Image 1 (cartoon, rainbow, N blue to C red):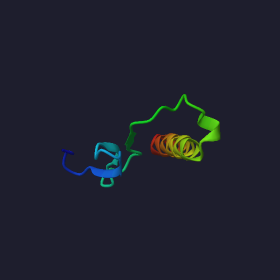
Image 2: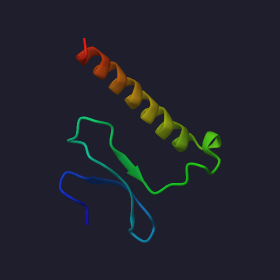
Image 3: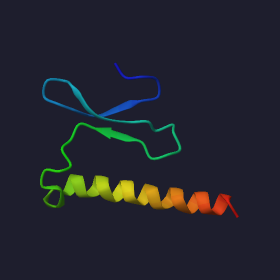
Amino acid sequence: TLGEGLEALAYAEDGLIEAIHAPALAQFTLAVQWHPEWQTSANPDSVKIFQAFGAACRQRVAQTAANQR
């Protein structure tokens, strides 16, 4: 059972939730049951996850720097 504000994004064949997100939160939030060490660069979904995470990190750094000015 997912907590309040969480949404399932992916399910295994047996119904197990394998990916969730929290759309109401402002920060980057994504949880997946996944093996990033397994052929990451050859898997387009893995590449997209790392790209999204990197973009979120860069955005957070920029926001933090702007708030400290």
